[in-house]
Length: 396
Image 1 (spheres, one colour):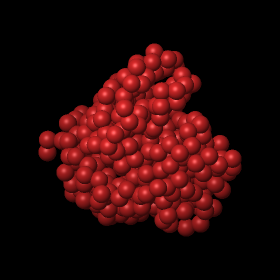
Image 2 (image 1 turned 120 degrees about the vertical axis):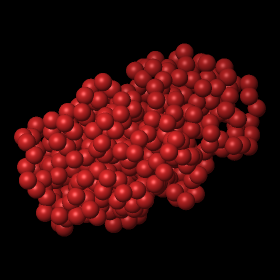
Image 3 (image 1 turned 180 degrees about the vertical axis):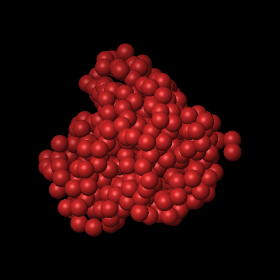
């Protein structure tokens, strides 16, 4: 497959993406992609959609077909609203006769959508919503996830932070993503001491009050003192550094994020954490193709959620190739359970017990490079899936 074919087919998909399609045509496989085209996580949703289209093109070698059947993508905007996401998924399965659905962006929306997949007995491939509960206590057998979960985030970040003599306070958003993230982080910490959890509204812009509570909890603690930030979307929690945390010997730590958000990381050279993806880290043919095509098409590297969307597409096409285009749900489930597939991060495998994709994470240290507008996460160590004891949190 050439880069030119990938570009042309991706452009064609973009043109088709928002069209409401008529009754099911013979020889089609319909994929509903529900994500935040607008709303607080719009940037994440747009990256996922682009990556998903590019991934379908790459995985089908430019044909946009599997087993002679045309792949048709139906895009829907959940606006980050749980009730809307729920109704859109029902419409996708019912009215649009989607064979499989992918999305959404927000964990809150995903939790609202899970029962719909069970009602219609069709697969929902979750990408990139993170909350553990999606493949945990709210899970059902129709749910698969290529996106990382809160536990994978937490366990990998603990590699950087969980040291004797370290005292940690968390700053997170007050909804499923933040609370599940902190819970998983608490479970992962074995040697460090967690002394405070600070939750703020998702639309917070003034972090002063929350930061002061964090400072008050940490300032008199002995040892290394760290505020670990779990944040997504709008708002810049790194503004808390303006309150002169260094005066109290307090550091900031966080995981990876999209490149615009990582502009703030330039203020924290040497900061350590763990990330799901950064375009310069994985070394494999799939990532090389994604990076090359993205640079050619957009004159910039692929971002955090672009890789996620690409991975979801690789999973979908791998499954459909294995079933020879058969979209019957029982066949897809039996095929996908335990299935391995290539992604920009390397090989992922759907764990049979909860359908969570087991995958590598990357321990990084921030370097300031004037050639980049963001803090560059230099690889300290790849944390392989086999090294992470990711809890199974469902009741299967």
